[in-house]
Image 1: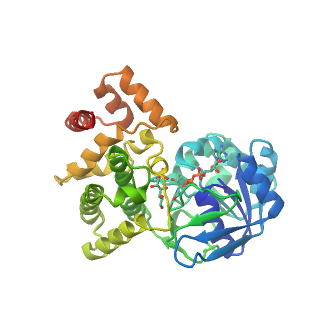
Image 2: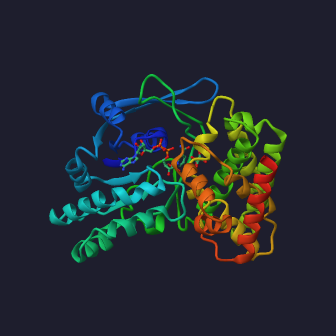
Image 3: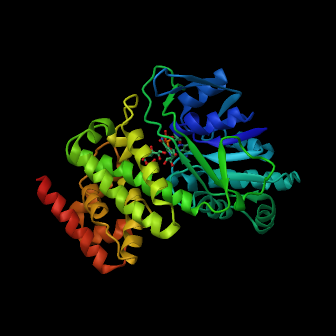
Amino acid sequence: MQAVHFGAGNIGRGFIGETLASNGFEIHFVDVNSTIIDALDQRHEYDIELAAEGHKKIHVANVDGINNKDNPDKVVAAIENTDMVTTAIGPKILPFIADLIAKGISARLANNNTQPLDVIACENMIGGSQFLKGEVYKHLNDADKQFADEYIGFPNAAVDRIVPIQHHEDPLAVSVEPFKEWVIDESQMKRHDIKLDSVVYVPDLEPYIERKLFSVNSGHATVAYTGEYLGYKTIGDAIKDEKVLKQLKGALSETGDLLIHKWHFKPDELKAYQEKIISRFQNPYISDDILRVGRTPIRKLGYDERFIRPIRELKDRNLDYSVLLDTVGMIFTFDEPKDSESVELQKLLKEKPLVDVVKQVTGLKDQGLIDEVVASVENKIKTQA
Ligand SMILES: NC(=O)c1ccc[n+]([C@@H]2O[C@H](COP(=O)([O-])OP(=O)(O)OC[C@H]3O[C@@H](n4cnc5c(N)ncnc54)[C@H](O)[C@@H]3O)[C@@H](O)[C@H]2O)c1
Ligand SMILES: O=P(O)(O)OC[C@@H](O)[C@@H](O)[C@H](O)[C@H](O)CO
């Protein structure tokens, strides 16, 4: 079995690569980072280390690397014959790889390759694979689209494993937390004979992706933005501060209420899930930078993202969202010169009235909520000064 995986970064090598390799796949990693791609192509193997007592090593073999900037035709040829396509490159990058996937689909039609294929976006976003499908279809003609409708699936997925930015001499080495969870929407698949061991297949992904995004990611981001606001640099240091832990627990309590009301998760099971998440953030074997977890704040302030969506949906149900709103105020103070979206957000705040920036980045139309976000930001700017 062959897989083409876009994004040989932290989660790509540290989780998707591990899972595909342990299921017997030969993996063609596609990336624009020539250091990583050259090393994969020369060595055909790498090691993952578990960030836990014992530091267990997992060996991944049968891999190579293709640089899509230098060798786009090689990527298309790989897709033409592959059994699976996966991505972990970041939601905003998906549109930039869509044309290559489209060319791969056209090549399958030209060669009459009617073996069904699933393209699975493993990104932190709701509806990631279906979003990618929309981008891919922009590059297909009518015949290609008809072929893709029949043979190419874009099943949404949720992936969960904390993989911080890596600092090793070996560019391929990757240290990951032991916890891992990969869930795929079975109803959107075309290639039903491939069922990966250790992956959970569900008939409807929505409850799972919302539970993941609004627990792990809303919580993680709450620690990052509260921690940064209080002057911390890492998640591990920030979460030791009682104020940060209280903010995290408050945020999880609010998103938990939403998940229970909307999806009927059992309160006891959700509580255990949340407690596990808190302990994962406290893992002493991981050093995760606030800069990474808080990265791309404009994306994280999006309408369907980890703060604004639960806030909107809690408001619709007359439930409390005060801690989430308070945290949103702190996101606007996230001032990190190394993060281009943080720089852009700070620039917007200098150039435009606050209310316009809030409307632009959150996409909110509800004037009451817009006013509440503005008040929260003003409060945070005032108390920070
Ligand atoms: N790291 C985690 O803990 C984690 C966990 C779950 C999900 N995710 C999600 O996985 C995705 C990737 O995150 P990451 O932490 O691995 O990021 P990362 O920066 O480590 O990896 C992204 C990789 O994509 C590559 N890339 C960028 N533009 C590209 C392009 N045009 N073509 C090909 N490759 C390109 C980069 O060079 C990089 O190697 C994100 O959506 C993230 O939300 C991350
Ligand atoms: O990847 P992002 O920027 O959407 O979110 C940052 C972290 O919260 C995220 O990468 C987590 O580590 C991951 O989602 C854990 O599964």
